[in-house]
Image (cartoon, rainbow, N blue to C red; front, side, top):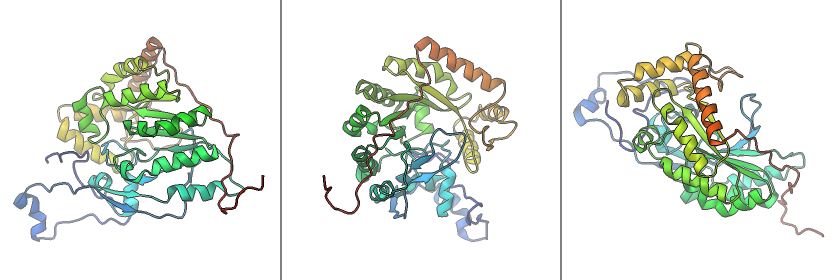
Length: 356
């Protein structure tokens, strides 16, 4: 197997969970097409526009600190091999592998749909999380500007919103984020996984380089925007060596809040990650998965509520201790920002001017 230039997944691994049939050899020439024509080249990025009826998703998970979220896009061109959102592409009868990073979906009506939701008399405001499934600032945001339209609406209605990203494109909306922060309506979290450009290119081939992410954190903090550095995910024997350096670099940028999330391998992500390991790190693949399984009770992944975000065992304790010590030395904490939900102004969807 050869790596596909500019892509994270080694293959277009199929899913059997949502009507995607597993292909079997049937004796025609297509079975040997790679031997005849060579490895297939990755398809160029394509985007299909979706027009859903609603845009706000609600959850009751005890493991995450928000109860509602918006994903303006499905699939992500960043191509992070470890992305826990990859299995969602199976809902579209597409592969969580290369399809996830090449066959994308955009929701251009997102702001209008959110406006209609916020206008409902029974709607009660709570922070909306953006970037929980796929990155709101992946490259196609430069063309669609859906994330910016959503932020404009949040500013108009004084609705709190949080952002998680791996891109310094977030700085293109610095004007909106600065104004939102002035009203205590936003916080931004940028994920940094390593300090090595080569490792990052293998892990997340089309995401912003680590140094640029750290610089973006500094610019957000300088603008008065609550900014948080997330070491997500920490991959044993591949990225954990950068833990202390990332924290030190974030502190040098004026960041005072950091957190870490261990590697998670739900559903099709586990076999994709194993393929990736065998391709790029065959010398340590067994060690990596051995540590992962030790932290997950002997499994590739522990999906149980209250456990999926909390690794167990000696290795997990070691990573926690290292993280806490590095934060203590750099003066970082894990701050929980309480955004203002009291200033919400319900939008008008009738087009009528106010009486007063």
